[in-house]
Image 1 (tube, rainbow, N blue to C red):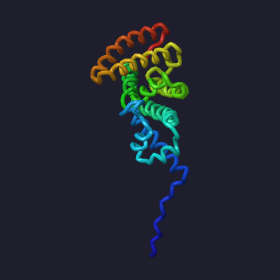
Image 2 (tube, rainbow, N blue to C red):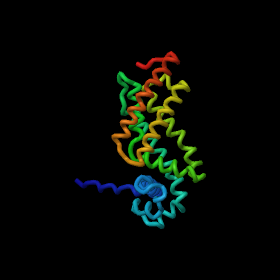
Image 3 (cartoon, one colour):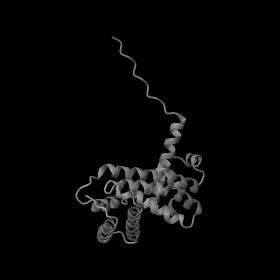
Image 4 (cartoon, one colour):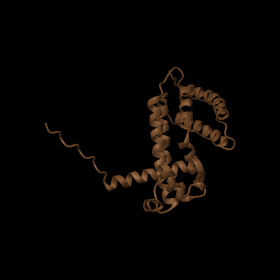
Length: 215
């Protein structure tokens, strides 16, 4: 019996190859932001990290600004996906407020947060980056809110509680940024636990004022 000839693998289209190349370059940009900072993220370094020629890099992104602006949206997508993964990972137990604080801590760990910090600081003096960041950050923050909504799903619709979550993120981000000066992950986590204790008291008072409870 004659065996059928093995099917040939489907060839990628030019559009697919181009898309894959862009993703490699954008992922490499994020890696460089983490390792070298914004000032040290150069197009030759990105091309080298991505394993592509400078010509290929220039073909897709003609300048560092073009590359970083595209990386901002790419990074926002990855941060949003991380928040969605956290949404599926965490299970609400007997301490929803504590679980919310733990979830916020997890979402602000790792290279994605570091890369975002580099871009936020760079955006202070770069109007082009600032404008792009202003467009994408609300989407990331909404994903974070969705992630913590499982702990207080009905209450999160209240503006006061949403404002509280933003305040908690502001506190956490301040702790993590100050930790960049003299990195000590354990110290940063201790400071967060200390801050979270104060935030918990504020959260419980807020829920009481709103006549809400969390089970």
